[in-house]
Image (cartoon, rainbow, N blue to C red; front, top):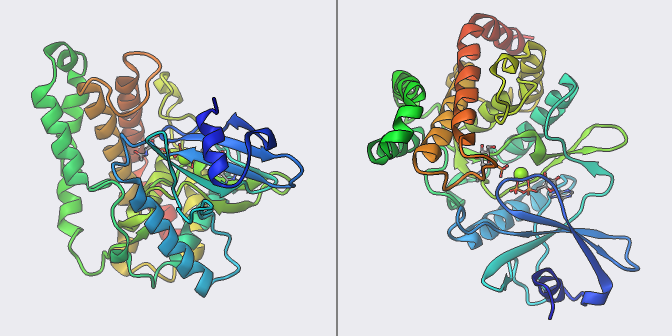
Length: 358
Ligand code: ADP
Ligand code: GN1
Ligand code: MG
């Protein structure tokens, strides 16, 4: 009997004896395979879509197709990693009850989980900024939300409050300090609300998941090649992309680090993000958006802390964990990062001002 990957490959015209497949990458959400085809100098990435997270995967296929067509027409030289349709023409064939997609494997590419040089932060911020810039005239309302309310801080705060109200007493006790911190920082939600409907803070087509493993670098030159993981490409605010870069590039250790003494901000990485991003988006952002550059870090770090805490209180139903308290550790980690961000606020704002005026 064929394996599911073999059945999927057949949908693209490859028989089981022609292909080799192996699990690939470190993403949290989808299952990714590298597919090699005998006698062809080509490799493919095959992914099954996590339907617990993406309730209607065909929305992703439609969004990626619309954006791909727009970029091909207007910027034909841009390297956009869209889906390859199956022989039937489907962008996401359904096999054994699961949606799959194929894309071409970008040759000589590598993705990292952490950054070891500010140049990588510059390159990644430039690449994510370039995607937003090229899409700045694309109507974001054409994109359907693949996860409704994904980066809506009000919704995330409400979800936290609901999880808190319904959580087991034991969990609430263990997380009591983090719950206090979450509540005492709700001024971040209020600040966001005071801007969210401003015409100078428009919805744009945003990537929404700008962590470093979603960027491909050239293995030889280490230059940024292209962005990947377009599952959450949808309408949102620019602070989502810039803020998630701050959240995940400025610290040498990830959200999974349990030694909180290691969680501090590398100012030179922060500066590299701002310079790389403004190189592309400096001419696009409104003055209001420029005023919110520093806020983007607070917004995203706080939202991620709320999401981890909510999942902990809900009994770990969303993020994969490798030990029971992991979502609580991630919450402590993100709140430590947030407090570092606040304590370095003056210097970070002075860097933003310097970059904006250079
Ligand atoms: P997830 O949503 O689970 O994070 P991704 O789409 O980010 O899945 O893919 C997981 C990993 O697979 C990436 O971090 C990268 O290492 C690799 N990858 C994905 N697409 C490509 C591609 N087109 N070319 C080369 N590597 C890729
Ligand atoms: C998930 O797919 P991945 O691993 O790049 C999550 C992001 C979180 C991130 C935290 C669809 O990203 O929003 O910031 O984990 N993606 C989704 O590591 O929820
Ligand atoms: Mg990813």
